[in-house]
Length: 578
Image 1 (cartoon, one colour):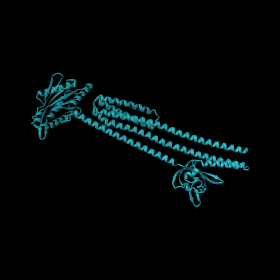
Image 2 (image 1 turned 180 degrees about the vertical axis):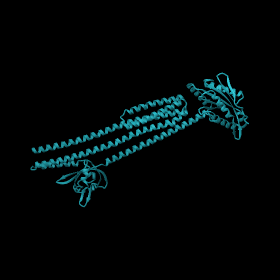
Image 3 (image 1 turned 120 degrees about the vertical axis):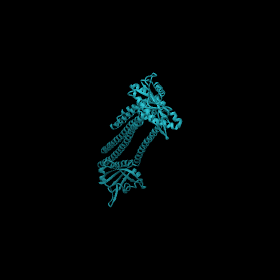
Image 4 (image 1 turned 90 degrees about the vertical axis):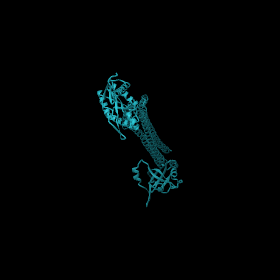
């Protein structure tokens, strides 16, 4: 009885040890899986927050671009200032979002990408501010050129870098998801392997204990009952395993199989015993002239020690399924035998396939969303371009003469005010020429308005050739023109240009085989010598023009001061338009 108690104590301690090991393995595996899941969640949340910050920065950049392009449509300085304030507010949001983003621990490569994006955004913001300044100074052509040649391309480059950062973060999330899934699968596999090893270890311990008991109480009748009890426990463990368990001899004949194995392969209980395992696993078991042998088992065991092997199993109805097997070699009654643990991994494969399909669909959605955003952006840019173009055409029609294409009275007055302001600021001199054609009415009455229109166009072209590109030529109405000469070195330069204009206009013009000739009377006022405001300068130049006409036409007259005293000179005689 003392030997029995000792043996039972050894059995209890042995199984307690096995259970402790299995519990420790299971707990460690579950803790590892929980740690992986928690780490993945934290990383994904951080990256999603960074993606959200970058989306905010991208939205702010887009709002600034829309505000700037809206400012281009209006000529109202107050409205331009309102758009500028909106852009400033958006810039503050951009800075706040960037500071939050930089607060995260970002790798060097990503930080370099952020630095490139920020540098491009700063450059674009500077260009946007210059556009606003041009709009405030009413330099619309400069603002238009800067917007479409510098600002918008820079904005697109900055937003492309933002999209690159977002895609990089999304790809990192996908990579982490795949990596974590692989680690979890490996942890599960390791747990299953260790659990199987623990079961086999417990079986081995039980066998050793049974042998010891048999030797110690071989003479006692109770030893047989103890042995039966041990066999019953072993059978219970084997039959209640979730995995299939096969025992094979060295020819591949099935010695035993548990209930799970019968269910996996679709056979009734005990039908498989005595049959070849070739029908269940053709990849593992091969047939030759000597019978059924396990193919390269020893070589496989050396290379795959501690790892499961994936094979194709064959069910009783002829269907196949993916399976994982672990093979161990043992000795039974002095002969070699093999224990094969079989797991049906159909569901595992389906989960992997669904995960792969989900990743592909996610990548497809990201690509489609990117293309959709690009199309929307192109459409928006096209609409803005069309609106700006239409606004420019309307502005041109409202500020230019339809016949000659020259600025009209309204636009000339604006240029005159701006020129006087700049001249006062930089201490420069200006000259205002008021021109009235002599003999034009006779041409119009004799040859008709069509010939008169062609003559006005030809005279306008000649006047353009006589002045500099930065000088402003405008048609005030009828046959009256004005010229604004800026940055004069000497007031006498205005007289030289007036003489050049008289000589050019006096030359005959051939229109429809008719030789037409007109003269011109020019009145000149000077800034700041004659006056210091636009209205007075224009009035004095007009008065000087009438003085020139009174002196005999085809002459010029200069207003020396803001008094009525004029200087006149005759530089040619008008020619009869006949």
